[in-house]
Image 1 (tube, helix red, strand yellow):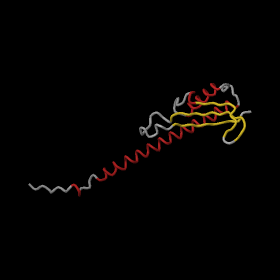
Image 2 (image 1 turned 135 degrees about the vertical axis):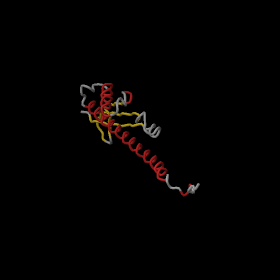
Image 3 (image 1 turned 90 degrees about the vertical axis):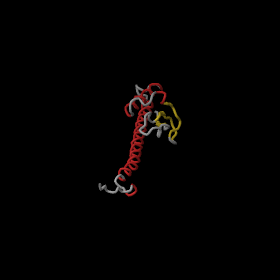
Length: 143
């Protein structure tokens, strides 16, 4: 019987593409999921900022839905649920101060709203962004 002589493994290049893809592909997947996660965090931050701005304006003009601190907190929570994914914040995450004397270096009488909450509970990359707490604030001049 005449069998062909096998090539030594160090000269065999038939699986090198698969090994290279396994190394580079896993790094690209981690990079892609990290970019998506950062995008979700920035989306949540923007939604919280919009909710804080609307709540500060609502409290400053004393709209019918913001006649008290508790009502303004509820309004901010409802606005955040529009912009965020589900019920990400509750009223305990909303701080409301009426009659602030300064805001962003300006003096006067301002209605101040601050919203703080964790970024997300379930991340694509476990633990990478677990300790991030998003905090936004907004103030609106009072008449």
